[in-house]
Every structure is written in C-alpha cells, then in structure tokens.
Image (cartoon, rainbow, N blue to C red; front, side, top):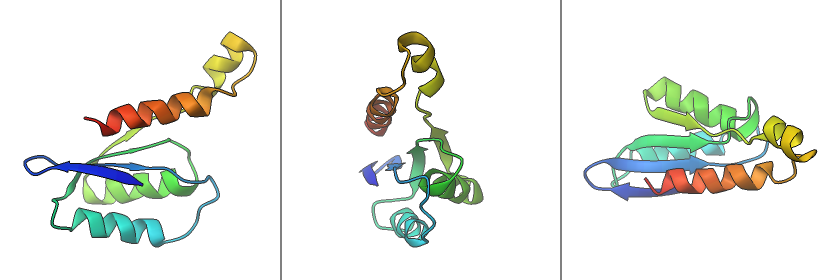
Length: 102
C-alpha cells in the first residue's frame, strides 16, 4: 500500500495485494491512515480483482463514502492483440502508479 497527501485535499492511497488475501490487517491499516493526522483518504485506487485485497479495499471505500477507482489489467485486450496477456499486470501497475501521482 502506498499513499501521499496534500494538506488541503487529503490522501490518495493505492492498494495492491493477492487475489487470495483474506486478512483483516488491510482494513485496520486503511482505518489508521484515514483517521490519521495527514487527513482522510480522498481517493483509493486498486487493481479491480473481485477477490482478495482489491475487494476488501473496494468494500472499505464504499462503506465510508471514499471515492474508489479500480484499475483493471487489460488481460483480454492484450490476449487478442498480442496472443498473450503477460504484460497486462505491468501495464496495470504503471496505471496505478500514475493515479497515485494525482
């Protein structure tokens, strides 16, 4: 997880993690950041997996009214374009990084 903040606007946070992640440490960490001195989380970005860390982050944001932007890896598009989707994860990670710079 990474975050940066602007005192006037709040924190932009990114969540990454495995599809099989089921722990509750992520929710506690998001709560700590959201309620911390640097201000609330104003934008949360994640990889748009329907399970694991992404799903936990999405539910957390929805419960608190935090704007959430899921960025899905272009698996199908690359498979059609290149015949394989190996670079999809790297492309999504780059997009997540760009979103965190907002």
